[in-house]
Length: 308
Image (cartoon, rainbow, N blue to C red; front, side, top):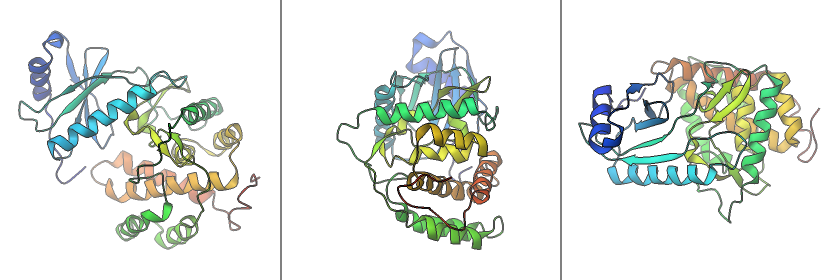
């Protein structure tokens, strides 16, 4: 997926676990087939999972990042009605693997990439309840950190320009450029709330058409309230998407900003992963198709009014 991607063999993981956590030596270790782009995932027994960053970086920086992710996961644990992974341990470089790595609890369920809940109104209601639970957690005075998605849409202009250039042979770029020109100026009026930050299919667990758990919670933090609405476009078809909006009571401006954040994310997925992770590329393309199908010539009907 990445030009500098690290290789993480099962034998290396076994050696690291045995050396650093001897209490788990009797537990089987097995690789998890996943479409994730940040970590290689391995199960340790039935109740634990190990996550190994895939891209080289400075060791202390990775360690700080993993500690911050664990802190965010601890803060979120038990704060929503849906299960989330809880941090267990932090591993160190060794056995040929150059970076720190993490261990957390394993959650049962099937990722939405493999069990599509897009037509389920019940799942949409669950998703709305999750977003409501996340927003209800106290920010404790914290605000958006200033990196990644969740702040000013216009700060992503340079990245979108790269995406447009790299997507000319893949997508209807002139139409997408026009869409971004309108989206980027959507004003930000609401205060930050706590958000998951990456509600894509690979981070959502499904069971019998219902939301069964949320993965990759290390980015839990304050951001634009519209950020978690990316899930409406990444995960839902039109009917359930409307059910999610109705349950949350989103006004036009919040809804359109959520669509804009989904657009930013999807534009990067299509071209970047077209060869290295085709499933992720297809997810981005499907999200853009949903956004384009919803395009309204009249734009927002009014920043404080509900759309029809």
